[in-house]
Image 1: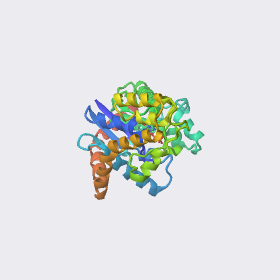
Image 2 (image 1 turned 90 degrees about the vertical axis):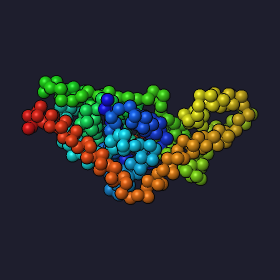
Image 3 (image 1 turned 120 degrees about the horizontal axis):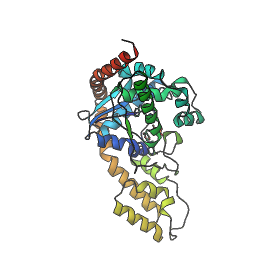
Image 4 (image 1 turned 180 degrees about the vertical axis):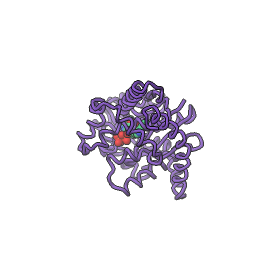
Length: 321
Ligand code: ADP
Ligand code: TRP
């Protein structure tokens, strides 16, 4: 089974990214032949500051490696190192109906948020299809918001195979963790880099404490019984503790007498327990200036021959050979 997923280097990674996407990427390293890449060509649609892009690429790579991505078990590379990807994307655009892209929620949401509607933003799903198809991926582990893009990929691959009466592309499937859902931010809305409500994975010490203590709660008196399900601290805490501990906190909320600061202290503690070792590892990895570059280049060297074979198949099928 070939597994593939991409991560945009568009800012600091947060707890929502971890639970919604990264966690399953890490778990799947042991379940098949995994390919993970940094989608820097995609990030160009929103990051227009060259030094910021360079920094984000290195940061995201270090974050993944520190959290346990193992370049011995999987292939970790940079999208822009595989020059066959944009060429395949062009071939795919010629079988992609406008209507298919016009229906994409992600494009509409980004434009609604004020991101300029350039061609790259519109054609984003076609480049993503090229990423997925170029390595013959079977499974694409993503967060819920990316499901439609995998469906677009299936549609494009099917159209190409059909038009050219060939089996050039493997039709991939998405894989979404049902239990991850949408992780709330400190204000209870979806946690997102762009909403200013995120808890970053590599935040620590005083800054992390301040962030956790700024999780929004109501002003119910200590004695009052409280509804756990509408409480942002409970909703974050439950993502990190065992089922038994979750039930204990639920009872404490309902019984009254609970101080929100006690639940926040526990949240801080579980964040430190979960991410503490990765924070230390990240500091170590960052000391070696060449490490990340070495890993990404070795990854690209492994992907290149696979990409070349797939592209050659596609070129031959459509008459460019
Ligand atoms: P952001 O909204 O912070 O910009 P991205 O769009 O870069 O995040 O998402 C990267 C990955 O993380 C995607 O697979 C997405 O589904 C997942 N993800 C992002 N935010 C959340 C969240 N709040 N809950 C669950 N998964 C999330
Ligand atoms: N669009 C994905 C995101 O924003 C990133 C991505 C680019 C990707 N190419 C991909 C994910 C291919 C899976 C497969 O999260």
